Image (cartoon, rainbow, N blue to C red; front, side):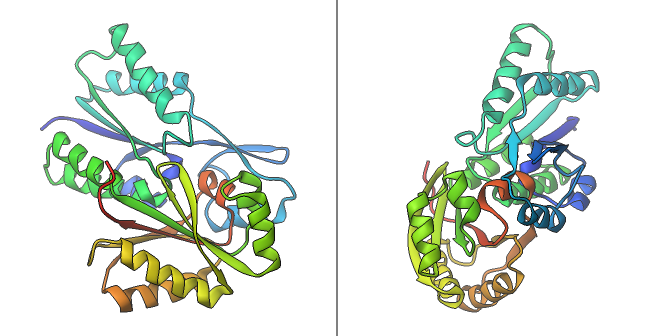
Amino acid sequence: MAKYKIISDSGCDISKENEARYNIDLMPFEITLGDNSFWERQGAYGEEFLHLINDSPEMPKTAQITQFRFEEKFEECVNEGYDEVLVVLINGTGSQTFSNAVQAEKTMREDGKLGKTRFYIIDSHTYSLGYGYPLIEAAKKLENGQSMDMVVNYLEDWFASVELYITGFNLRHMKKSGRIKAAAAFLGELMNLKPLIALNDGESVVLKKSRGEKAAIAEAVNYISGRAIPKTPFVLVKSLRTAEEEEFIKQYQKKTGAELAMTEWVGCAVGSNIGTEFLGVFVKGQRRR
């Protein structure tokens, strides 16, 4: 059996337990909050980080993973004798990280530094558990003896069909990050409107606006259930709105019978842009590519 390694970035938001269990090498993003800079998952993490964002008058900033860091990591893989290296990264439209990884592999290949090691570098086209969940599934498949080519096909199918829906309960971060227009966010706050946003392939679209939390959850259940392939699992990324998340799960499962496949805290990279109070749901829809 080929000796393989799995690499991702810290934006995938998998648990530290799964990171260790499946021996996944997570390259951290650098986070700056006010005068403090730290590596994601090595400083404040999960719920603790979300409270830090809320308490800070400044917006967090994230830095891409550079080509140089990828070259160091890839050289390490070659030196450790890996035959195959699977690299799954955050949406290439929203971050230069994916392009830096591709360029690192290309440069090192041309310089003859990669030997016989094969690198499979995949743009997830999504965020957070949208690639964290299938990353763990891919690790399970490899552990059970599936070939790397079969696992890559599974991932590419998922990334061609995964859909992310966000219901914003507090629009402060979305407004400042540009996820929705500032004027629309301000008007929504005044009128207690909660937008349902599709964020797919790097493009954000406001689909619905509901007045109040209860109506927003009901609208999210109705819309998302109509987009998901029937009976397929769904994934939920946790924010500080745990009551609304629990209500969504209850209503969605009652309506669809679908399994909740994974739920984890949103990380720094995604929370920095979307904020701390939202409902984030991933489902498998129809293939877009």
